[in-house]
Image (tube, rainbow, N blue to C red; front, side, top):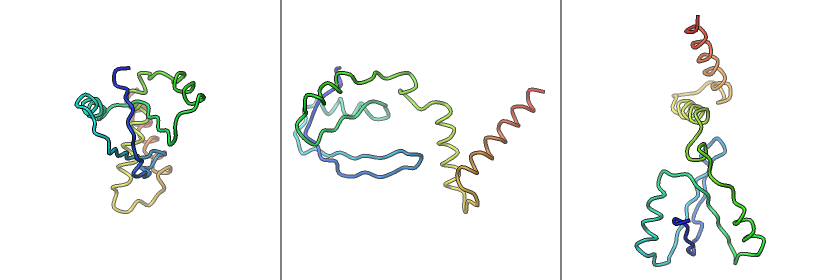
Amino acid sequence: MSDLFNVRSDCRSTSTKGLRQMKIVFDTQENLSDSEIAIAAAWAGKHGFLVFLSEEPKESDLEALANMPTLTEEDMGKSPATRLRSVLYRYWEILQKPTQTFEEFYRMRMESLIELIKTKMN
């Protein structure tokens, strides 16, 4: 794995982003090499796995790392259904004063889309 490196880090903050997503910010005081900086910079916009150990790794941690799953095509980006749900959620958020819960809004919009497609099939 050419883009794997370890560096001492501090977890500076976490925040929720809706739809069961989180933003996690890490900081390091280490002097990184040019190649490590390039590796981390190349991660922007990519999907992958994050492993954070708050103590020295145990044997069971190393076994878990050895058995990590591989990324699938869907892991490389959001599935179309997840993207649609995310876009609808963002649209619901920017509406001036939503009068429905997101679930109600989502179901209504999906039903409208389904009906639109069904009418196009006739």
